[in-house]
Amino acid sequence: MLNLQLTPGLYGFLPIILPIASAVVIAIIGKFTESKGLLGSINTLFILIATYFAARNFITILNTGIPIVASYNAYLPPIGSCLEIDLFSAFFAVLFTFIGLCVSIYSIGYMEREGIRSYFMLLSILIASLVGVVYAGDFFTLFVFYEMLGVSAYILVAFYKNEEAIEAAVKYFIMGAAGSALILYGLALVYGLTGTLNMALVMRTMSNTQLSYELYPILVLFVIGFGVKAAIFPMHSWLPDAHPAAPSGISAMLSGVVIKAGLYAMFRTLFILFYGKNAVQGYFWNMNISLIFAGIAVLTVTIPNFIALVQRDIKRTLAYSSIYNMGIVFAGIAIGTKLAIAAALFHILNHAIAKALLFMDSGAFITEAKTREIEKLRGIGKKMPVSGLTFVTGSLSLAGLPPLAGFYSKFLVIWAAILAIFDGNIVGYIIAITLATNAVVSLGYYFGSLVRNIWFVSEPSENAKDAKEFSKTIAISEIILVIAIICVSFLPFFIMDIFTKIVESLLDTNAYISAVISP
Image (cartoon, rainbow, N blue to C red; front, side):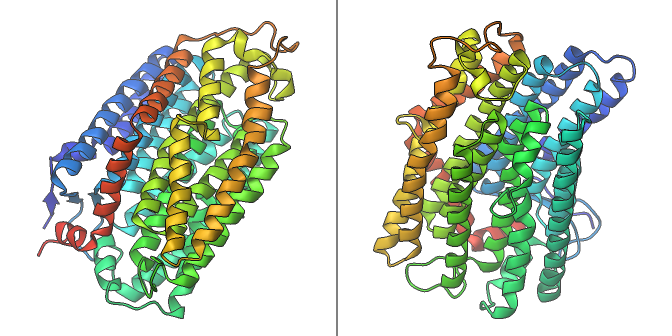
């Protein structure tokens, strides 16, 4: 019998349905007109409504604490596929649709007319896939949406069809395909252990299982497999190549949300299978796992951060910065305390907004100056004041300048590491020292390279001297994201309180299992 437990009804899953509907409508209308204004407006309208329903889901679950569940075929768990929206996944859906909305608005002004129908169709599918990944209630459904996400991202990276774009897309595809194969193998092992791929049932089964060395191969498969799309070291190398090649709106999606979807899938899977198992006092993962995660975090924070210092291409600099910031998030996961995970979520929010903004700004600069070299972009910020000021705001936030939002999340991850030290967790020493040191290093390219060259120069470069703002929709999207940064900056404790509630609901596994699985 078809099982539908919908709270508050089918509306709960419109954040997936609406972007797909947008792709269908654009495919039909695009046969008659290639007007980017019309097609972009249609896409923006659909994504705006999807963002509203994603926010509605989040507020509903925040107030009631009841997940939204739907099994959408004739079979119940353990066989049936399903969608499950809890507070954790609802937050990511709001973030993904919001950034997608801003990119859609931006793309109306930024994209050229050629291929515009395909572009907006693929953007809609990308957004639907992102939401599908976080709304998935079983690993099969998650994997299907994860592959949809990968395919749409590969094509969008290769959108310009030049040598650089095709090379970057092929590299991304090969690494993504290898990662997907490892994920599929890991899921096969999970099914063999538990007899199901339903997340709640796997969680219930694994709650009575002690950590053994036989489970470590599953850990390795998922860390490497999901680590490709999450762009954690050493699976990160596709990202610095993809960013320069892709349209700037897609660069904003890649660093803003696509890598977050990879990290979400990794954390969700590892949390279900490993969190709290055989953990000693002061640790929330098994000590061996915590040290492995800390090692990954240290490498992901440090190596790309130093590489970013010597980059001359603005998009490659921002790409390595994204990897560094994913290391900060992974550091919070490695610590594993409630505060650390909440701070990691806070940093996901801050980085997604600010980095999407920086790639949008850089796309506007590149369009006018016809170059990606930072030195040749000197002074362009004053020639394009909206893009210039928003770029400076986003850069200062990611640099951790108080009182901007990025300062709070960086500080809270470090503070969580310090508190872990007092609980006897040696990972705290590693994380605190690494993050504090690299926060100083990152100032070298945020201030010394990006902000200084874009804004603080007396005379613009030859490429920048004739630059000007050329699209109202680009300016609107940039201003929306700056307003979001300012709002978060003025409400850090309110925002952190919400993230604490998200983590509390995530850790309350018994409530999740009982809400999802009918007695």
